[in-house]
Length: 432
Image 1: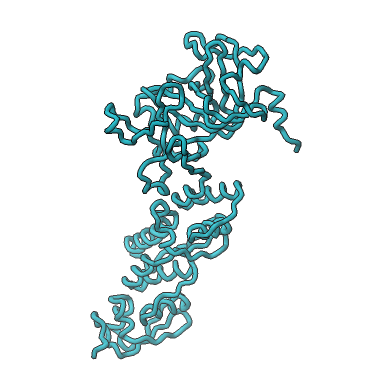
Image 2: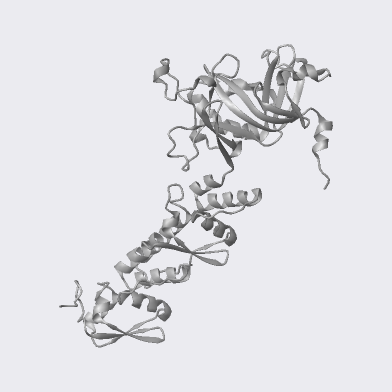
């Protein structure tokens, strides 16, 4: 039985001498033919008995010799990985170049710590392509292009992959990707989310984003609670309604009519990547986490509005403006002076606390609070500066649904905490 490789350029049984740096290597023609044609076969075809002198690293060449002799490459770190690829180019070893390029691992140094990351660990949709895929591809393509097009004597110097980030955080991300569970503080969770965005682990980011998913037995629907800042506008949707109820895209249970006598359709949300297989999007409950939302109760008209300002307004627009415009609702019509977005609101089903005290009857709130406050009359678009009797509450934290009906908007409060004035705000301050 012949041991000659398919492409036999050198006598298989003959030994050839290679002086790499300060070390002499002896290797058979069979091994040199295994990844040919290459620099070695080109030389020894013309100089069969000579010794080939190569001014390269003998440590790196030992790995390359293992490859030529049929062993799998045992690369330990990003330096070996990079230098092996450079020498695979220099020695013109096509099969080794492909093996390194299609390696099962990413080799990288993060903050001084070496990582060997299995590509299968990062292969889920959303986690790939990622930072490591792109930097590795750049390493291969850029170095090879420069070396070949400029006809250099040797490959250009290339630093091993290094990332100036926290190795501890990347270790945590690897643990999560492997299916592990971590006890995370809110601050640590936010740091890991930032790391996911840097490395483009977009699916893992969504798994880390704080979210509460539950089945609402009254509305017979599934709901998801998210902070407004964590919502991606691309994945917000409004269920289509057909004039023929039997043709509705998303059938609405009979229990849904809970706000006055109008059936409001709640905006829905499907989290990217992690909810891709859901048959239908969940009803969205979004959270305001700061004091940039204010409730205005107009006493005589018995109406309620919520005014949104600052960064909360900017974020609200970025999340909902596009999907509302697609449904012929223009948010600009709700914008008032002083950069306020003023939306009609319903608190009839809201679990609310005012000045830390539970408020059982929100509709009677203005009558119960015995003081004569003057607030802006948002019911009079012709004279926005007019003051009328009412009540203003600053929301410190609140949960909302956004209802749609006949091209109209309604902010439906689910849960809220509010304060009624400066004294109550001062109570919330702590000592340093």
